[in-house]
Image (tube, rainbow, N blue to C red):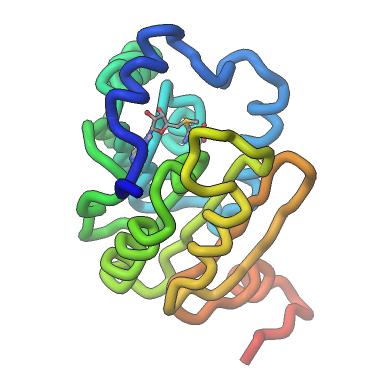
Length: 208
Ligand SMILES: C[S@@+](CC[C@H](N)C(=O)[O-])C[C@H]1O[C@@H](n2cnc3c(N)ncnc32)[C@H](O)[C@@H]1O
């Protein structure tokens, strides 16, 4: 098993369609993006890292909540479509790179792994998480969202991808969403308190 689906696989996908997963059109996707964004515990983030941005539908939502967004994709066509849709926005950086390459360092306080981890082998996914998560600042939010139905070409199921991510040392579970179609998990790197505790809602009790 190679470490990940080859980049040419995705070049071919975008040669066939400029929106291969119907992300711009489907109510399914718009609803899922709304759930994803609602699950993020902080109102604002300094710097989001989003590997596998595709045509930038989730990127567009992230730029509303984050001062900076760095998005990777292995397919140049996807990055070009995203740039065409979103334009040259301050704080948005689009990079041709892979989830298993080095993640941006510095002030990243949000990592959004949405519909991309299942393209890696389990060993490659574990390797990149074990290498990159210890570099995250304490308190960084990491969200993982993955399709649960089987796809023959993909090395991992969505459930397995989220489970592997959840086994990474140092990640504290914060929130979990599950339906027949998608699993979404939110973690914090290091200790974590609830949104109500963090924002001082009266009566909210700290985990301790
Ligand atoms: C299903 S789309 C997900 C788009 C977006 N994250 C979302 O949730 O709507 C998957 C994207 O991941 C890209 N991709 C595939 N393997 C990748 C990898 N190893 N690293 C980064 N991007 C990858 C593909 O080119 C494609 O654009």
